[in-house]
Image (cartoon, rainbow over all chains, first blue to last red; front, top):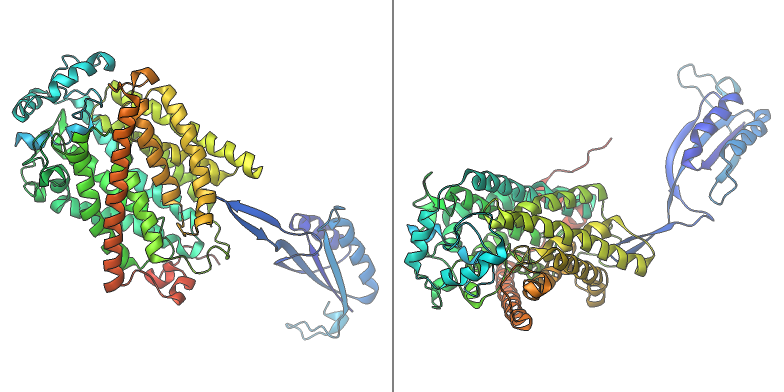
Length: 112
Length: 473
């Protein structure tokens, strides 16, 4: 199993959610986060006081998927979240050791 | 008590014959006459002895139109403080201090109202013991004969309106002046210290200043011939200088200027500035104390100067920073409102345009550059906007009152009146600086002015009032 974390531009969320649903993903966690990568922040100026805002608002999406399903999910996110400009975000993929559904105590692929 | 009823006439026709016609003018025979024709006649009235003044005032019939306008104007000026100024300032502080600023404005409104009723109106507007051209104690401050509003009945009149309306109208000016100072020491002053400061400053700095300018014949600055129609010296320079002194005595906010302290809700600030603009028509046009041509002209020049100052600030900012900001345009508008305040009764539309452009441009530099260069933390630019625009306005009021420059005053010597205005400005600066410093030092030595570091970091809303503005979950 894979644990896929994607940091995306907030306005692409609807497209990403639809694409993931089409790819068969049945659940996800979305968090509002702030950060920066190659896209730097911006400056704000109030009556001569200039502030550099480094951290930009982004959304973090987390999805757990079966190994054979991972590539399809990564492609779906990439296609939906890509604008071609700096700041589109990143996808992090890591191995996932165990999944447990709390209600039924099913584990791993049964719990996905 | 006839003398009291005409207290404050200097506001409209001072001894130098510089101000404007009103229904109270003893020589005016019909309302709606053109100001230029009336003004030369005013000089005659000005040398009449007090008794003659009193008698002529009594012959004025009550006027329901004037009264209706003054009732309205009074509400407009109250609107300037709550919620206008409160929101204007509240939006500019950080979210953790919003309530403290709203609370300070609201509490000052209540506090000053009670003090005004107890003794404030009397000290500002009692004309007992005053004689034109004579300097005595009552040239500086009124007596206590009207304390507790003694002698005020539904039948009492001030010119053509009930005196109760005049008491209320002047009260709203007394409220906004200490409230303006709040912007300078925002985000760090103890609430208790703020209340003591406001009460003492209102009593020792504001009331005599109002009396000296508006007290009528025999008042110090009135006799000097300073033109101050709606309160450029009394309200704006007075409060602006107090703000500068306050932020110097109390010290910088922790972290300023390195820690970002951006406005937390620019929407509030825009709403507040818009309410100030609206309310200022009560302030300036209401200062005619009549629904007449003077009030109409005051309204028009107020609008023109405000718009010109908004454009002046924005243009300067666009050139200097390549951006036109929302905070910039509303700050410029406020600078214009301040600058036209002393001039609203005497300048013409062209003068208002020039006055606004100059005030907006100058204040852009004082609020955005001077503060950082000199390193004083005037949090919301009370000095940079109110004092500076007040000074620019008070000075230019002199020449712009001259008919030669399109004004409606009787000023003939541009330089001469400029000099008189400069003396009024210098006096106001010294008066406010000395008294503000003494009051602040007294409070600092006894009660302490400032919250502690932990409270300052927590924010005054929680630290002082145990409430928070935003409970979002």
